[in-house]
Length: 319
Ligand SMILES: NC(=O)c1ccc[n+]([C@@H]2O[C@H](COP(=O)([O-])OP(=O)(O)OC[C@H]3O[C@@H](n4cnc5c(N)ncnc54)[C@H](OP(=O)(O)O)[C@@H]3O)[C@@H](O)[C@H]2O)c1
Image (cartoon, rainbow, N blue to C red; front, side, top):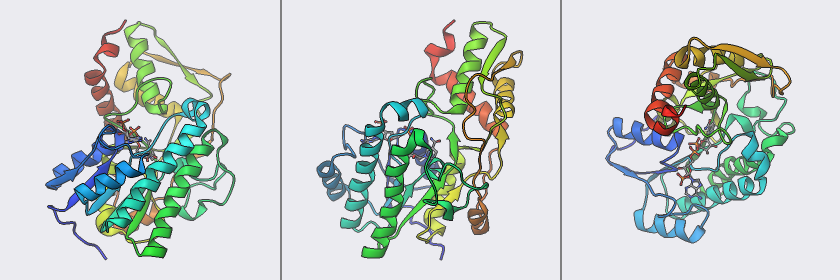
């Protein structure tokens, strides 16, 4: 049953400085919400139960978009698995418990497409969660996030809490992480082409064969979906949020090249691993509810590059 959220409702967005949280805050402002609550890590460390409990008691949020998490690429996940496991466990345990205790009216928790089993049939349907072994490189992160999804279900079962969860695909956009060590495929490509342009280096090396397929969605589309789900989704089952369309890494690299450095030539380094051949979400359930993404990949990549140039001035001018 769709419910319109009151525009003066007290809405807490966790992780508001990150890629997803900052997009959600922009979306809420645009949609006319007047009481958006945020807290920096120094104001409330989400790993600290006492700090979270005190903040909820003082600020009494009515709605929660719980998007904070410890997020990173393959290298970071493989190097710091204990941190990825424990911090993500704490980040949802503290917030969900305080949300229940303080009678939050509705909470949305974000999982991720990368926590589905490694060898899922494609496109990935929601019910495939926990049906096979996880990708070993991000197992710690995936296990922690899965307990977050399950915790939402258990709070629903045991306490009648209106906690829902969503599974976003790979995201990109403003406030993305462009540091080469921790970044995902798209920001890494943007930076690579940009650095090649500054160095006047015509050849740009792409890891692997370029054949694996990936689905990417602009974070502003995800933010719109989150508000839509808060108003229109009531089910215990997590719901996929993606475009339902994928491109090869080679096609993606060409789109980035066209936006950043059209003169560049792509060289595929086949000595490097390809990773998972395909990862595409089945988005038929969210489409059936009436939501569809709006931002075409080419437009989104161009705007992400414009943001990078404006916000990484030291990188942009480095030769
Ligand atoms: N990025 C993707 O492609 C993607 C795809 C699917 C799902 N997701 C999900 O979306 C959510 C957000 O991801 P993101 O890409 O926006 O990550 P992000 O850019 O790294 O932002 C994470 C946010 O969480 C905050 N945070 C982390 N640990 C905290 C702590 N202990 N106390 C307080 N705040 C803390 C960070 O605060 P600081 O600013 O202080 O670091 C930051 O604001 C995650 O749950 C992730 O699983 C992301």
